[in-house]
Length: 343
Image: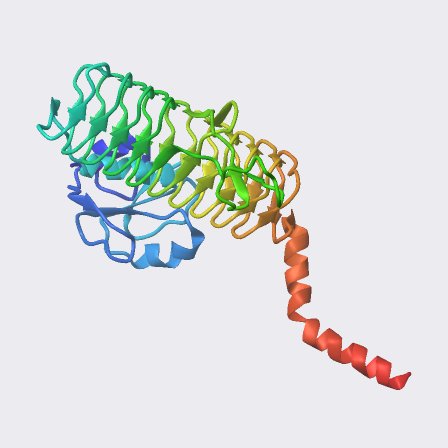
């Protein structure tokens, strides 16, 4: 593909590059070779850009000149994402139902649906047009799913859950698993029929609603509500191994990164970013546009637009000062001991 065509597709400006240069693929900046395209969006790799063997580099509009050809973009990272799409086409799945798939007679499937081996679709489930369900996907009874649904192997949508259009479930996602709800049984309670186990399971009678254009990545679990609904907003992206507890609300275009855990009834706003391993206690509200740094523990409300870190989470700048002070604690303790000895 000619570099000029790539620049046009990415809405980027060619600089120090021959428009007719042939690009055959994409690669990381340290591994790229002649004929390949790479990118820089992190200043950490600026030095690598000066010595890369790539024929062209996607850079920001104000990036300093380098020997390689440049495609200047307002958003290099987004341009790079689109460049990959120019050279990679994911597998396509022809409409059809595999002989081992089991579809209940009352289930309704839209046009151009692909059902892979051992897919199970239960009673009264409804799935829209152009759905792709790969092997061992299970859709429980009464689930309603929109158009362009894509479920990778072993994804599960439980009973009565409601998914919008263009929802993508990666491998092992479980939508609508029971919320973690148990009531303590008092000792000696003669009405107890739970065989003396001490906890009575609270029926999880609600469901999960996932709005359009959301993506849930591998082995993420979204619990159903005990009453009402758990809701994942439009365009939300949820990473691997995330747990969303019962009755939570996740706003639109919010990112929950790997191993985030939300206790029940957490309210997360729009355009929020919770980085890896952030934990949030129940009944907490996180305002629009807030960011929590990795491994933060959030026991209280977070204001819109705030950036927090630490456990318990505090303002990020204050946390950095605390970290700097923490490194000096041995020195401070030694000074305190000397002062005590003088007394």
